[in-house]
Length: 186
Image (cartoon, one colour):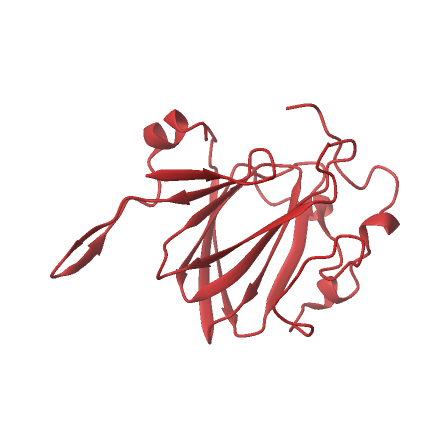
């Protein structure tokens, strides 16, 4: 497996080893020992799946408190996946990173807790699987406006199909005091 660091600390792209043959393809989508050796020691507690039509944008989501690390992959279709450092006091606060995840490239994205996450479906349909290291807590679930001009994400669209929650999400600067996680230096 190949691990690619990004400009955001702890955010990593994983390219699993592929084993194609005339019948199709095999790869390990997660192996605790291999991922730990590569510096990704998470205790995954839940697997989630979302199915989205073309043009659906989910995000930018996070939990505070009860931050969740994620291992994200598109098992069908293609998504434009985005991570934003929202940890107040972080040297990379407000910076973002994007990666194309697809059933063709089989890339995965590791997202530590304290980052907002979102994605735009580029294909007619996308099935996205992701592991999380903490359970969903309704009172901790929050969103930041997907096209917040202060963040400046270069989305490949100006319009998207959003949930009601994401449509009315605040900009980062409008988050209430204590609404964003604090940078702890790790």
